[in-house]
Length: 119
Length: 111
Image (cartoon, rainbow over all chains, first blue to last red; front, side, top):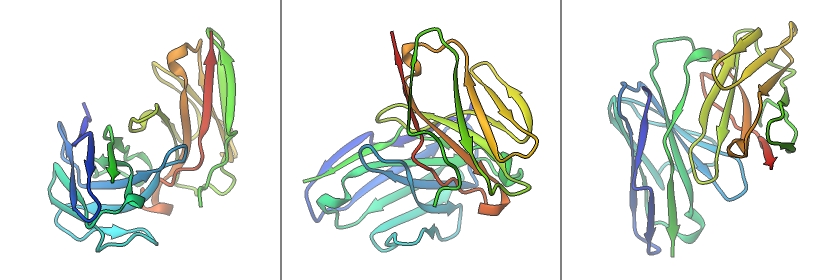
């Protein structure tokens, strides 16, 4: 149980276009989903926290107008990179939690990641 | 800033036990300690979580001393497929459940 999927697994786009990445919890309802970005040889960087039915909370330094997050249902969150540029090329990873338990024990289950390359 | 400190890298050989120690001096009373494993170009995978003393599951053990300022992940009899980055994180109400990843420990298992 606790499987999280992402689609697409990799995407190549031209500079200036927008790209949507989907994150789905396949066998549980996720009250909260998180979006991370990871550059080569670096650690994961939290971008935003997404709760179903409400606006996402972005970490400091992350442009909310550039990285649009929608969490329309308990099993789906989407990240749209608008007007993508080469510096947005990165590995984007989502995670999901069941909620309903104390923060300390609310395990985050991660998706397989999406490799974005902007030409 | 990450709240944990780990060695940047470790080497081991197949069949050996590997212990990775993590320092979390400022862990909050209600925070838990969670370890993840990440292979290249994949999302992190949950390994184990604990609050105090010892926790064991089918893949690892987690040792946490009474002061909880550090923890040790123990991987018994590692194989080449255990080569990965291992992250130690504290998780709880002090950070509303968010995970702030540090640099992790890159474990290289040699034949």
